Length: 374
Image (cartoon, rainbow, N blue to C red):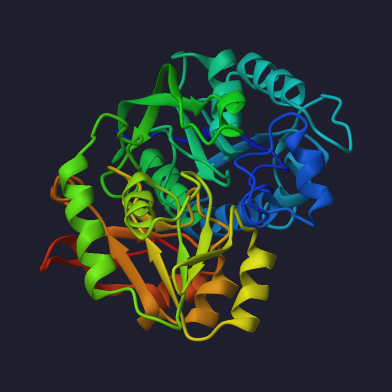
């Protein structure tokens, strides 16, 4: 059964995702100021506009309840003429208190669903108010998105809302997860589950939370041995994405790679560590040819756009689709029907679609489809 005139609370964390391209692991707390110092530009506004544009195309049977300024109104009025504007004070630089206050007012207004644009930090803030009283849905715009409440893209989020209105989407439970920011400076990934939220679910449009349980050390060693023996060549720049499988390759090369950052290797030497997008582009002006080596985020399957935004659309275009190398353990690939991309560049996402080889062992590969939901 569908939901007539669905009341949707819509809010944007305008600073979400700003740390990604400049090599930070988030924008919580003082990291925002560091992101600005490094020249980061807003990501969330563009993703909010993509969501709203597609939502407008799909359905008119929603009633939006929104905060003012850059937390909602600035984007909504580009596509919708009718909405309910909340009486909440929003500063020029928003904070988690703004998100909490907005969600409290949305609950008082009796919304049926809250859609937020942000990352795991925003998901936590929304969940702290909503709990399991109503469903929530994330439009992905963070640096790290490990929670199971996010759609695969802004357009996919709009599809989910439209299908929820039509009664097609089911209500499932999704984990609210976030990393311990205090451990990131030590290059340690420590993730905590903060709760379980209700999520409007449509298969292939909602991304599961990241799997942190698998070790697969022998598989990683086998992948690393094959890559070092058969893929790595002299006089080529290798841009190494984050993750334990990529770190196993670096260890095999004798390189002290960051676990969560993007590093660069040339002729067996580390020529860049924990790089930003700008620093990668500078290296690409010096070194040629170049290849990108990445591994998908477990259970989610993203090879670009989650946790490695430094490898931006511009970087990928410069290196070229044919010079992308994907590696993964066997157990990770068994659980994945496809790989995903969400670079922020809709045209590039479409270009990356198709089939790609994934190295899963010594002389062992999977042929896997790459999809986007732009």
